[in-house]
Image 1 (cartoon, one colour):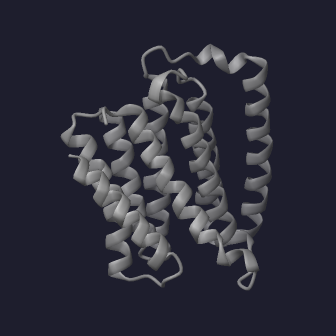
Image 2: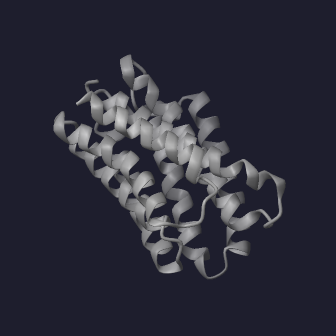
Length: 216
């Protein structure tokens, strides 16, 4: 079973070093999707939580669709990732000893308020810049933020302490991707770094969720 995690990590590293700045190709699609598919197979074969299987499955499908670099596939990919986040929300909230009331503590209220403000700013900017894709893109923002809020409900014991930082990595990855796709001009110097941030943070988030909810 551990060999699947090695395959996933190897595919992730190859994608990071070789394909981050490459144009769409079937090789790029295979490596990108394979890195998540290997994580998914590990969870299935180790009888991991059904909701984790669903989340990784939807996100893997989203990776495949977004890698095809066309508008129709992009919209389907956004929908697939939204479904993945909803599965993660359900997983977090149904985790034994998860507590929704912790969201009312002063520290978490401040975090949630900051996320709401950030989400409102992002939705405003994306509505202005995302063109025909604006409604799909801004509809995705509350879903990813809700995943981050749900992560705060998970107890911070054992490997579950990885859930909140992994959710943060996922939110940063999605935010940087949105900025890259819709907000940064084509010749902006940050574009040299954004693909590496998007991929590394995203993959580490998925691996963190796997470690938190699977017996590794």
